[in-house]
Image (cartoon, rainbow, N blue to C red; front, side, top):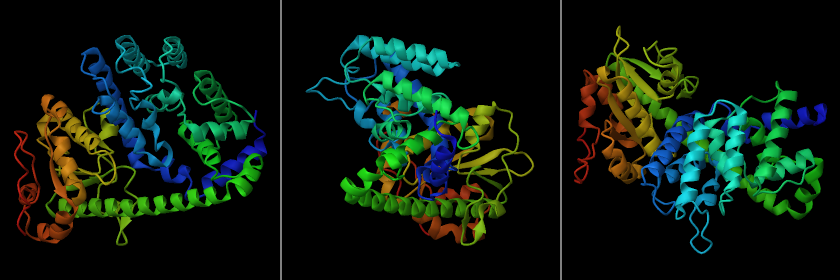
Length: 433
């Protein structure tokens, strides 16, 4: 067991650093929370594709690539997590693309883990998967498991393992399920021993290991290495982290600006605006988003899980007096366009009687990506409602005019763009209002 005073001091340093992953990734990060549902939906697609013989013989273009993209978007911790799943033809690893038996075993493993409700069920599935001895498929899978069961399965990468070995005085190895399970046991025990220090979600303590293993949080055990052999590398890492944090802050400010403009437009058109639950305390130009929107999402006759997902949509417009959702807007800056599309179409499928306008709000530089995602055959084949999209520059330029002259949501028809799934190019940008 860890010494209480020492561990609490380490946690205090970790939590008080505004640039640690605890504050930049784990706490109040809407993108992190949105990833859980997107990844679960993606894993469901992987299972269905394997069962339906649609999975393919390479990582690229598969539903598994979408899952790993959603994970690696959490770049504060998971940058590079997809590498373990790239098909390496010279080594024939990981052997889940060409070996049909291994592919089916992997699909069954994911399906059973999704359905699991107890720790021992997941551990049994890990033991079963490990027994297949699938070449090149190791504990990197734990990063998927974390997003399915965040309170019982920690993520796993090189930095986390190095941090674990330093903090716990262990010598665990990277590619071993046994090492991963041993690390998991220690983390759960530490979380229980210091339950008030971090979170039941194992992402918090895993982030601590990441900070230690990456040399961002110095302990007695790694001080000499950091100060002597790795000084230059540490400074480079810290500079990169600082620049990444600054970039995230800039992107978050633009994201908040778009939420602010959408809320202004919605209220000017006579609707009630609702901003994503974790974003209401943010402000733009000195105005807090909570001043423009309802304090919470009104009660909807839906399952709690669906309501929790809807509450994370960036901006909603509700018809006054009815709670009917007239417009739903997902602001995409650096996260997966496709996961935003799925959230919007899920909303429309859950509330078919609301006739909701679905709209992605995207940076101008990502327009081609939006068009490509909306034309994905796998998306078109589902028959899901297709959202339109609105560019950041158009919303910023025309916001005042919409607020002044718009009568209802149809005023956006002059600004939004739609993708013709028959293959034609999107309609040209709207003229000035």
